[in-house]
Image (tube, rainbow, N blue to C red; front, side, top):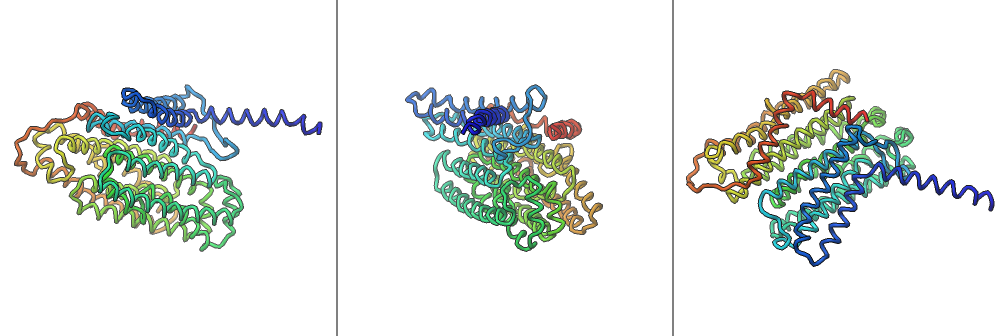
Length: 510
């Protein structure tokens, strides 16, 4: 009894010390959690002015997270690395880079959301809950990328998924939104069920849920390849749903069309990068051994990548609604991200972050164009945008800049992102001699040319289609202010791509 009592204080002190270190490492996540609870509590108070101020309060919370994460990148605040909270959480430079991206995505999405009108609480009774859920979704994304345990990974993904469903429903009700939301929920529940079933397989095969430990991969390397391919295929299904990759891309067009444009802008960036970076953690570096002894898993991923790219690109050609076009464009970009992830090159992490940054500014910028025109014209159909670019050249020019970046043409950051992608595929072909990499490279080049058609089609309506209406359009002030500002990084990182590359390398080295 004496021995036990003498060791108890030391064990308690050690546990408290580990908890404190973990809390110090997760300051942005604590801000998001506290903000989520506080927004819900303040919404219960009978003060309309206070409820109207919750949107600005949420914006400040995201800004505080971004400032803290930027200070960590610059070395002003120490970054606690390694395992935390009983090895459930893993903190490193990749997690920090993802956190910066998620905070920036949330801030830009709120700016897009605010462009349409004054989001007053009395006009939308669920506005406060909407912002609380947005805080919870970003919290889930941060935890998803920091998960070192398969159960933690699943719970974080579910937090993101459930929050995403609510984001679709909470902002004004309509029959179309209800239909799109139900489709989103059904696909999400199906993907989550498959993922949980796959996790149970992996746990049974390896005896552990710690998927970052070498012992996990060593245990799997001795198991039959067919069973492993099925198990990993089920796990990857949950991530493909967030990535909008084949065969879980069918929810995207309906949700993109029905959901608020700011929410769609967020969906097209933050969850995609989170899923991509989790796949990166799974595929590198321990999984290289597994792919060597189990090539069928690599073949499955290559097959999914090819179909995602082809379906996204060719389906977008027939779209007349700009938001549906951007949905299929998002599917095609998911295919390009998968190309970077499965090539197995050492620089894949940096190139994924570079591509995601180009996608962030290109997507957010063009979704802001959609929001501005949706407010001014009252429609997101291409036909209704006829002649607007010629009548208002400033709007047409900034729309052209964002679309050129999404295509991957100079002088935009999208061109540099595509250049890094195709260079990495060529290196994969040279290193392995596998002809599949050459096929994917040629397919990527060809489908980039095909994408030129549907993106330029938007510009054709903006500049060359005749507009019979003589009505003068009124644009929100945010359009004049934020659209030119978002053009700056799109153009700057073409001429100074090394700045962005060095910043990414620095963060990953932390």
